[in-house]
Image (cartoon, rainbow, N blue to C red; front, side, top):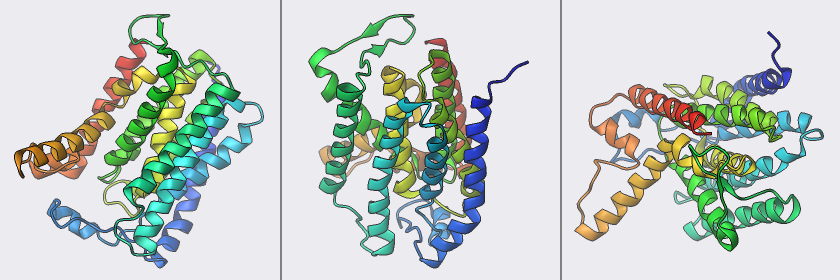
Length: 320
C-alpha cells in the first residue's frame, strides 16, 4: 500500500513544531500574566479557569506558517489560505493583546474588529478573483458536477461567507478543546477534498491538522492554555479560504454545523432578549454554555459536538 508522503509529512512537521513550542511559549505567556478572564454569570466550573494563559493560538499560527513555507514554492495556491489564516489571526492577536496585556477588558472596539475583517476579506477577494482568477462558482451539495454562480453578487456573498465563518469559529472557542477538536475534523475534510480535486492546498490543510493535534495536547480539559481570538479567528479564516479554493462554500454549513449553531444561538439570544424586554431563549449563549448549564459536563459537550462534526463531514463527503 503506497501512501503519498505529502499526506503525512506536513501533519508530522506541524505537529512536532506545535508540541515543541508548547513548553516554551506557555510558560512565557504565564510570565506575561496574559490570563483568561471568566464571566461571573457563566458556569461556576469555569471560575477555576481564571488566569489560565490565553493567546495560545500563536502556537497554531507558527506551526502552520513554518510548515506551509516549506511547500509554498511548489504549491502557490496555498498562499491565499495562508494569508487569510494570518490576517484574521493578526486581528485576533491585537484583540487579545489589548485585553490581556494592556488590561483593557473590551479589546478592540467592535467597529475596529469589523473594519479589520472587512479589510482582510477584501484583500482575499481581490487576490482570488483579480490575481489568481479562482472560480467562485459554488459546488452544489449532492448534485454531482453542478455549480451555482451568483455573478455580480459573488463578491458581497464572499464577504458574508468569510466573516460569518470567522465569527462562527470565534464563538465556538469557549470550552477546553472544543474549537480545536471541531476544526481538526473540518481540516481533515478539506485535506481529503484537496487531494481528490488536486486543489493544491493540501500542505496547509495537513499543517492545520498537525498544528491543532499538537495544540490539543495543551488545550484538552483541563486546559493549560487557551487559543484566544488569536487562534479562533485564524481558524475561521483558514476554513473560509479553504472552502473558496475548493469551491466548497455551500458545504460550510454542513461541515461547520457547530459553527453555525454557535453563531445563530448568539444572534437569537441577543435579538429575543431585546424584543422581549429581557427574556432569554437559552440559559446562556453561545449554545455550548447552555448545555453546560443544563447539567452536561464540559467534556461531554466537546465530545458530542465533535461527534456531530465528524458525522456531518462524512455527510458532506457523500454530497461531493
